[in-house]
Length: 158
Image (spheres, rainbow, N blue to C red):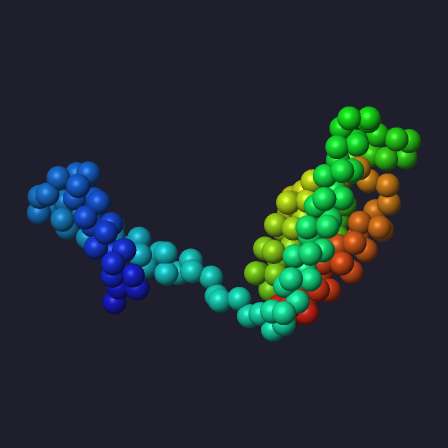
C-alpha cells in the first residue's frame, strides 16, 4: 500500500510539526504524505542495465582526457580570441542511443566538457542539439560524439 513507509511517516511528522497537531491536520497531512510517496514511486526510474561495466574506466579516462583538452582549448579561445574560420554554432547530431541512462551519461559528458553544451534531445528523431564554442568542422564534432562516446556507451548499456 505504501511504497516508502518511512518516508510517509516522516512527511506526516514534518507536516504536523509545521502546522500543529489537530484532527484535520493529521487527516490532511496523511493524504499529502501518501499521495507524495505514490507520486515519488511513479517517478522512480528503472535500474540501469550495464552489460559491459568493465568498459567504464575506459570511458572515464576518455572523458577526463577530453575535459583537459577542452579546458585548454576554451582557455585559448577566451584569452586570445577566435582564429579565422572558427565560430560558435549549434549542431544537430543523430544518435542511436535509446537507453535513458546512457543518454543521461552522454548529456553529462557533453555538458561537463568546456566549450560544448547539450541543449535539447529530440526523442522522435533521436537527435541532440549541441552548442559548440569553437566550431571548425561540424562533421568532426559529429564523429567525435558518435565514434568516441556513443559507440562506447552502446557497448556498456546494450
